[in-house]
Image (cartoon, rainbow, N blue to C red; front, side):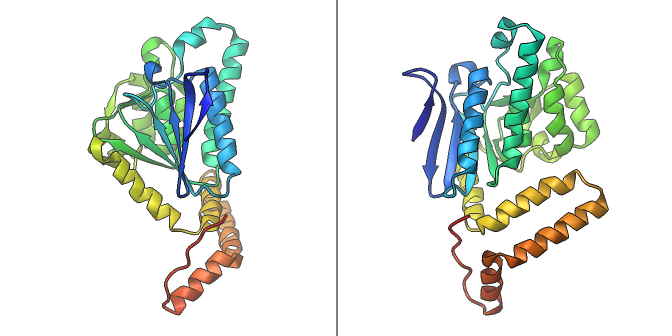
Length: 267
């Protein structure tokens, strides 16, 4: 396990690697993993490193301590009240969030405790999410006079519009059962089964062609923002390119010959 250091004794972010699975753990447990300016920088840099690492097949984003993430560090934000600072902070955070989507590898949020405001935004930006059945979700900035406009971006793309706006305008907490019903997370399990459930997903993804997954993930997010005709054009081109890939040809040949699927390694 490696650590990006906040100080000599306190890492901000932990990275562990195991058979193609990289886990990035927010490590501000005493602050419920709130996103400080420095933690955003470290997470952004870690995502850049993972994107360039061909040994990584899937990423798990987790939080240390009692919570996944409590959002932005409000004390730090109030200590720098200038508009220029706030613009830089939210711009930087938005770019970090976009890297979760731009990453060639799928990203799974491993959620426990609570995911609030920008923490809920993190969950919505990840490709997949597994939550403990005790997790509480909220975008509660409105309760403080601060509408969660940046979390609104992925929430409105994950949840039905009226349900997303209800979260944003009331600031009320949502339990894990409601989160899965509304599409914010993929799987909800008892807290002691979260790691096992995450492993089911990582094992399944690692068994697939990394080239196909990377190509498919990129096309998936691009087509969502297109009209129907443009989406089909993009999808058709992606399928054609995918068919030219060595992985697809080997997999189809194995299927036709009724042979075991290849073990895909590289990207």
